[in-house]
Length: 365
Image (tube, rainbow, N blue to C red):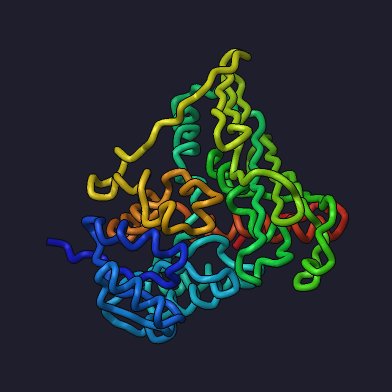
C-alpha cells in the first residue's frame, strides 16, 4: 500500500476549513497544525484530534515527518514561508496571492525549481462550480469561439486584519484574473490599467495608493482575445462578488448580478436562466460532501464565508488537485509558473495605474 502524503496546515482562520477535507481524503494523513496563538492552536487541534502542534512555522518545516505544508497565513508571510518550506524539502500549497512583489514571485519559483517540490497556489475561483461549468461548455464546443471575457472582484475589506487597510486593489487580483486566463489555458502577455476614484486619506497612508477601483485590460499570449479585470476593496458600495463573464460566438455566460439572482446563458441571443451543477462527482467519495458543507456555519462564521458563499465548493477540489499532483509526481495545475503569471498581472496592473495607464509586459518567470 502506498504511504499517505503527510500534510500540515499553517494558519487556522480560513485554513481550518481544510482540516476535515484532508482528514477525510484517502491519500492524506493530516499530521500537524501551526498557529501563532497557542490557545487557538490547542482549541482547534483538540477539536479535530490533530497531534502535531506548532506555534512556530520555522520549527514545523524542520519536522522530517511532514511531506507537504498548506499555508493559509496573512499575505505578507506568503513569500518567505513558501520559500522556507520548499527549501526544507516540503511540497507547498499556498492561499492567494502568491506574493506581493515580482521579486518574491521569482524567489518562490526558483525555490520550487531548485527543490524539485510541488508548489500550488490555491486559487478558489477556477475550482468553483461556476468556472467548472463554463469550462465544460468550452471543452464541449458549446460556447463556440471565445470573443471576450471579463473578471470582477468587489469586496469590502473593512474589519479585516490591519495589513489589508489601503491595499491596492490589484495586489489581490487573482480571483478576477484567474478564470479568464485559465479558460484559455494561456498566460498573460501584458496589462494596461487605470485607477478610478479615491479611498479615504487614512486608508492611503500604508501603501500610498489612492484608487478605489482599478480596472485593467489583459493581453493573452498567442491569442486575439482580450480580458477586462476590475477590482475594488474599499469605499465602493457593492455586494460581494467574485464573477466572470464569457462571450462566445455560439453562447455567452453572464454571472448573476446579485447573490440571490440566477446566472444567465445566452444561446443564439436568447437568455436562459442557468442552475449551475455541482461537480462533486469528480472527487473521491470521502470528500464529496465538502463541496456544499464545511467547518464554518451560521454559528461559527469566517469572513470569507459570510462574503464569499463558500468559494463555490472549490475547497475539496483544490485539496485533491494538490495531493494528486504529489502522488502522481507531476506539476500542480496552478504551479509556480502559472501562479507567478496570474499574480504578476495584478502587481503590474497597479504599476500601470500609477503610470496613468502605461502598457506593461509581464516578464517570463
